[in-house]
Length: 289
Image (cartoon, rainbow, N blue to C red; front, side, top):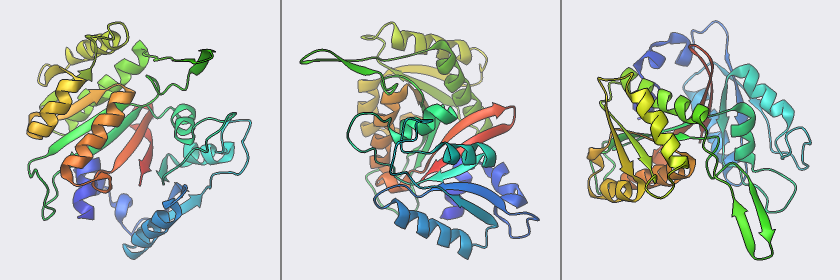
C-alpha cells in the first residue's frame, strides 16, 4: 500500500530513482521534520519507525514549535526551522495548532508564506480492500495556497463589524494553473476543472478563471472546464468519476479536498504535499502527515 501511495502521489519516475528509497544510496537524504502539536509527535515517531524499518537512508532535522513568538517570523515557528527546510528542500509536517490570541500568525500560514508553498496537492483515490460508498474515485485536487481568503488580512472596522480581505493576483493564479496543467500532462490526466464562484465574486474569481483560460490554451490536448463550487460539491457526491484534476483558489480547495477525503474513507487516506518551484526541475516540498 505504501508503494502504491507513493507512486500515485509522486509518479513512477520518483520511485524509479534509486536514491529515493534505497539503502544503497551513498549519502543519506536530509529532511526537516516538524512533529507538530497534539497527536503530531506520536505520528511523527511512527513515521520515523516506518522509514527505519524500510531501511530508508534518511536523516531527520527535527524542529519543534517554540513557546515564544519569533519576531523574525511573527509566529511560534523559528527562523532556523524555516532555514532548515530551505536548505534540505524537503520536509515532513505534523498537525500544527495555532494558539488563540493576538500578536502572532497562524503556523501553517507562516510556513506557506515564508516558504512560498503555492501549490497544495492532494491525491484522492479509492484504495483496493477499503470499502466505501465509491470504488471509482481517482482525482487530484490542486489548491492555490498563498492568498485568497487565507491571506491573513482581517480587521475590525467598527465595533460589531469585521472585514476580511480576499486577495487574488494574476501571478499566483497563473502559476497554480500552470502547475495543474503541467501535472495533468505529466501524469496522463485528461481533464482540468477550474472551481470558482465567479458568478458572485466577479472580480476575484473572474481573474482566477481568466488566468486558467490563458494557461489552458497552451495545453490543447487537455480538456478544460469551469465549474461553480456549489455545483462541484453536488457532482462530487453524486459521481466523483466525473472529475480528474481540480484546480481552485485557497478556501475552495480547503473545503473540496476534505470533501473528497470523505468519499474514500477519511483524511488519513489522502496524503497532501505543498510545492514551491525554485527553478526549473528543482522544488521545495513539504509533506503533511
